[in-house]
Amino acid sequence: MSQNLFEKFTTDCVEYNMKHLKTQLFMVLLQMIRQKGWSQSAAAEHLQVSAPRMSNLCNGYLEKFSIDMLMTMLVRIGYKLDADYNPENADQPLVMNVKKAML
Image (tube, rainbow, N blue to C red; front, side, top):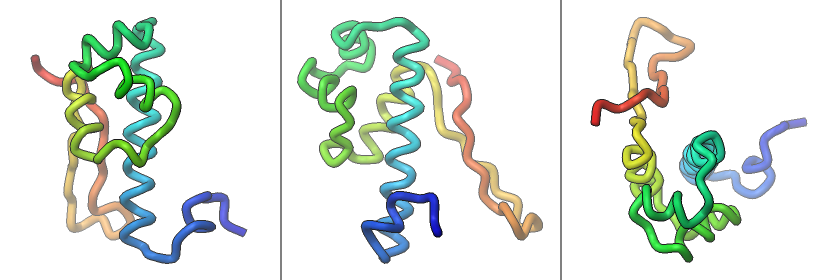
């Protein structure tokens, strides 16, 4: 039995992977906001989004966000998503990491 919730809602591997990436970005953003101790209004200001948009994020309305927007917010908070490609690594040829951005 699978532990992944998306597999219960879709059999489309593209849709599954896009939702999975969106969820991971969402969780990282929320964790960083909490670590900084920002209120929703402070986070909205730092991330340059409206208060209703920040409320949507904090309440988990992921369908209201594109991956591009989540990535933009990640950069605005001071991080970036970095991809390392190694074709010789058959198990994990592409590894993505959140790293501190040079601002």
